[in-house]
Length: 125
Image (cartoon, rainbow, N blue to C red; front, side, top):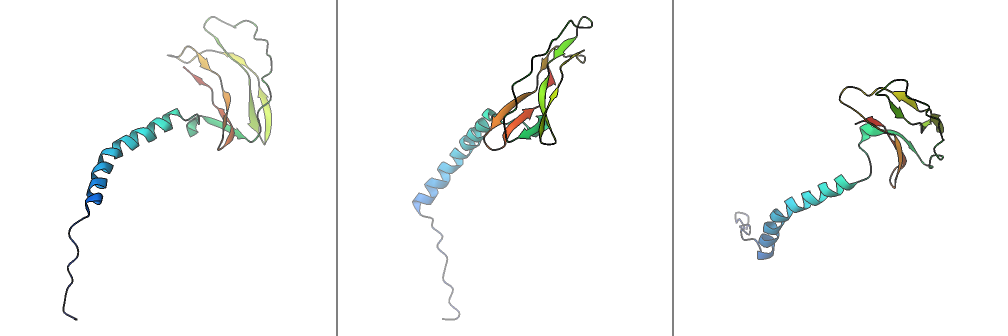
């Protein structure tokens, strides 16, 4: 039977058609769910990560603020940074906000199950 061609099956089982139809309608829903989960994630974007540690940072230190040097200055409180595998205290200071900003969102440590302790950079708001 060297010259005989066996035709390929051109019909698709009914369950395959229904699955393909339902997967086309489910795809946008699955994408929406994935985006929602990503949006709810506590892990900050990489640009905001300042340091990562396997152990929790020490308790914040108490700092005396004193008075602002001039009107309009905002207190940027101190925080624990991670340098050469050690926690180092960065002292707070009074700072003038850049144009268009009025408040300071302080750096903060959050626990991420995948990475450990993550220091999120502070930023002007």
